[in-house]
Length: 306
Image (cartoon, rainbow, N blue to C red; front, top):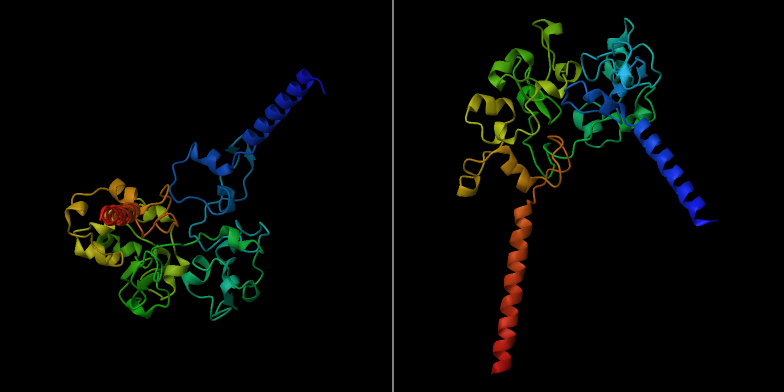
């Protein structure tokens, strides 16, 4: 093939490829060009939760459906039906419950079963979509037993999940058990909204009335918890460990935390990029190894001279 024809063909392929890439930019990027959000996305784009709307030229033609609570209303079956109907709030209930009274499986009734393992027993779930794992936000850190360990919160109110404590008798809770009614004690933030349940609390409320993460402390605001002087607020968010008292940790800001404890870009509180082995530790190992090598070389020269 002549050189010019070959070059022309390559240019055409590049132009077509570029057009294809631009035309397939995720809906998430289209949405964030207008909407300021921080709760991120599940799966690949915003339409996974904000469904039943038509996207044209990066804009939605109708008002997208906005689920009031993260578990309720979600299209667990994958049929894109009933999300706007009168029963939309109950659509997801049969996935984890049998006859709306009991759990479908004794293993599927805590946060960790789906969000930590990321592989729920599909045979135990009623009519669940086969690609459900693509829609479940995965938790890598800041839970009980993770490399960035969080003390088990389930002792409060005798709850089962270690991700929250919630006392149905008082309405008080910790972490994902912080209710809207007690947000003043949690620094103005909360994890779930019980306005719709009146004054009667239930131990399962943190599962049913969970709110988007926008209402919780910002994932990137490390010092809100770890340098929190208000003991009431600290208790509400699981009594996080205080920073060490050495000079290295005095007067630190969030970016100081990221520079050591984040591998790459910090995306979320539970993200896998948050590491216990900090970058400074790597430097320490290098210095220590270099020192050992230097001592060995020095001993070798000293012995050779003798």
